Length: 213
Image 1 (cartoon, rainbow, N blue to C red):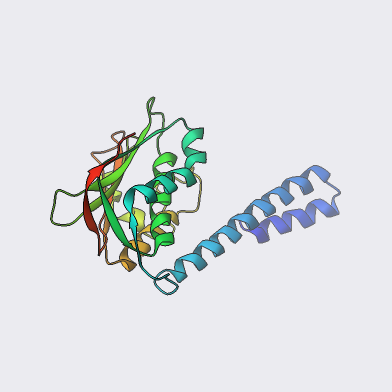
Image 2: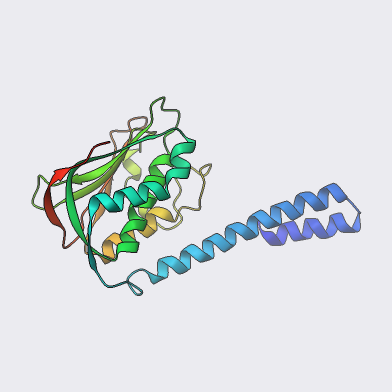
C-alpha cells in the first residue's frame, strides 16, 4: 500500500476517533516514509558513482577486507557467522572508499542469506592463479538458483522480499566495479549450497603471502 492510502485510512480513523487505528496507520506511514528516504538516499549515492570518484590510490587487500569486516560486524556477529580472510594478498588501485563499500556490501549480503546453516561461514580473499586477480566473497548459506545469477544485479531486484533492505546493495557494487574497469559475477551450485561473488579490478598488483584467521 502507498502512503496516500494510509493517509486516507488515517483521516477516516480521526473522524471516527479510532485511537488504535490512528496509531496503527501512523506507524505504517512512518515505516513507508523511512523506506522512501532510504531509497532516495541510495539512488542519490548510486548516481554519484563514476562522477564523484576520489583520486585513485594503492591499498592492500588485507587491510581493506579487515575494515569491511568490522563495518559489517553487527549483522555478522548477530547471526553467529565465522569469517575467514584467505588466499594470497594483492594491492588494489582505485577509490578506496568505493572499494571498501564493495566488500562491506558483499559481507552484508552474505550475512543476510546464511539461512539456517548451523555453521555459517563467510570467506573473502583473492585468487591470483590466473592471468588477472579475481577477488571473492563466499558464503555457505542458502545458495542461488542459477537462473537468477545475472538478475540480482538489476535495480530493485530482490529474490526474497522478506529480507532486509530495498535491493540496492548489489546494484551499487556492480556500478562501482564497472567504474573501476572490472566485472562481477555470482556462482552457486544451487539452493542450499552457498554463493560466491567474484570480481576483477583494473590496476591490481599481485603480492606473495596471505592471511587466514
